[in-house]
Image (cartoon, rainbow, N blue to C red; front, top):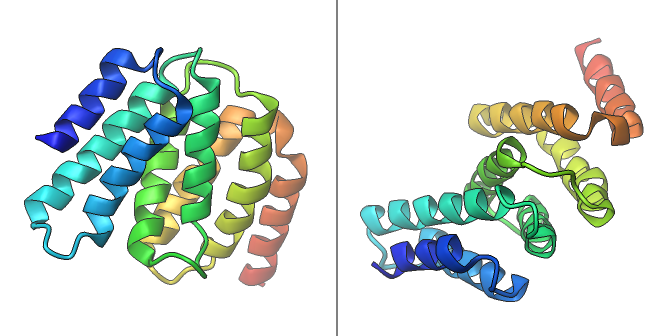
Length: 169
C-alpha cells in the first residue's frame, strides 16, 4: 500500500514536491524492488510498478524539469556496471525508456548533458552485452534518444556507429 501511496503522492502533488522528495520516493521504491531481502516477488513487482508510475508522472509534466534532471541523474548512475547489478541496469534502462517515450516538453541543457555524457557513455558499454534483455533495452534507449534529441547527439552517434561497425568487421 505504501508503494501505491508513493506513486499517488507524486501523481497528485508533483507540482508542489521538491525534486529531492520525488527522488527519495524513487529511491524507496528502488530499495524495495532490489535490496529488500525479505520482500516477496509480489512486493518487488509492486515497487517496479511504482517506479514506472513515478517516472511516467514526472516526465509527462513540462514544469518539472528539476525533478526530471534529478531522476535522469539517478537513472544514469544506475547504469554504471562497476556499481550496480544487472537487475538495476535492466530497471534503469526500462525507466529511461519510459522517460524518453513520455516526454512532453523540450529537455533542458542540463538534462541533455546528462543524456549526452553519462547515459551515452554507459549505453556504449552495454551495447556489447551478451545478455539479450540488456542488449535489446539498450538498443531501444539508443533509438529513443535519437528520436528525442538527435540534433544534440552527432558525436555520440558517430562513436556508436563506428564501434558497432568495427565489431561487425
